[in-house]
Amino acid sequence: MPRKIDDLEKHAAKFWPTVLTQREQKASIIPRLIESQEKFIGLLYVADRSPTSWKDALETTKGMPANLFLKHLIVLSDVSGESLNRYRTDIRKFFPNGTMTFRWRDVEHNHKFCSLEKYRTWTNGTLKVGGAGLTQSAGRNTTFRRKPYNLK
Image 1 (cartoon, rainbow, N blue to C red):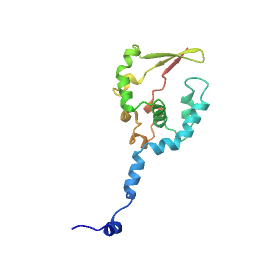
Image 2: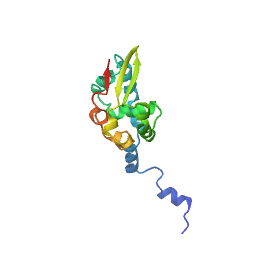
Image 3: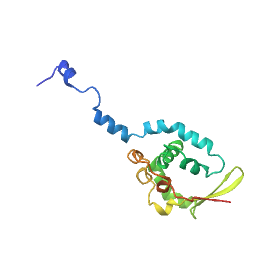
Image 4: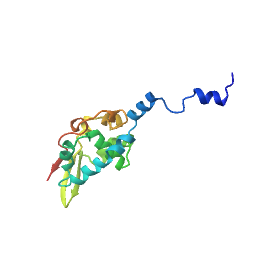
């Protein structure tokens, strides 16, 4: 039975049902990133004493769980979770002993990749930075290991 445009106008849903809209808002990371962007930038701005100052700032910041902080870093570096997993599999080629040496403010520092042994993959799911993972707050102990830096 063919319908007329007037029938569709009267009975069709013009917008997503509220249930679907709410479900999409929970799964989408974009609103959460936009909402927390200013706090993320502020945290980086004030945590400039050492390359590990962000940890203390993150612990004292309300509304910025570690997995959301990590997601901001992933977006900022333009690396997706799946690309990050590819880096994880090759990281021993670049850092055979699992340690990265870098200079910050003319001082040499070492970073040990602690999650190399803890996680087989670095995906959005294991790091809790995907849509579903970001609906839950994951603390630093869950997302990051406690002592990744050995400061010289």
